[in-house]
Length: 341
Image (cartoon, rainbow, N blue to C red; front, side):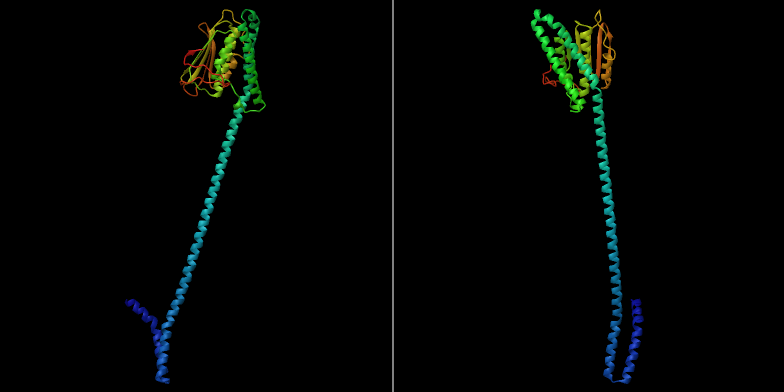
């Protein structure tokens, strides 16, 4: 409080001295009422002057504060704009990265599809050979025995000719599918191919050709498309070889699941007089190449007086009881775990 009083005295002392001198001089020269007027005027000036100065100082401070606030607002707006720009840049970068990832995935998927299509087209040649050679082999056997059976066994001859016609139609249909793939009329994965469900029909055809054939197979085994085709073609090739090189011998086809792999075995007694060996470059070597194409294993050798062809391929799903399925042509396949057909 004393400090404030001292400051007030220091501030107003010059003004009071000036006013006192003015008052003395005025009274000395004029009457008393003029002196009163001068004193009042001086007092008013003395009271207003510092407040005007304080007002000017307050105005300067207000303008300074306003200027500072404006600068701070502009700085905040600039910072917000920079943050939004950085956020937009980050969003654009994320969008570009996502687009690049999607393009890479599409390119990878396209490359995988192209590679798969190329692989399947590369298999068309061996597939055509297996299809035609096996079908023609069966048709030749049936055609050779047909004329002799016409008079003695007319019903057997009729069945043989029906089997020849059916085999020819199926072969033409499969050849048409293969040529459609080569012409790119259909995608390789859309081509209908035989599999496990078609084995009963293959057994029927071989029996019609005179083969004493039994088949034992579990139910509900699921294989991939290429694995099922490999099993079908290997069994078909082994049966055709048995028909040509061990005619009249009983043949057994056995399918079983062992350690998450389907094992297909075709066996027949080794004849005392063997027929001609399969042509070089085909036969066992072709079956082995087909097995390797699906990560399978194949063996073909004589064992205890029997010729055995054994193929093992990965199983897609464990075997389960299932109703009679249909093959790709809508025909019912047999069923029964461990049943002979």
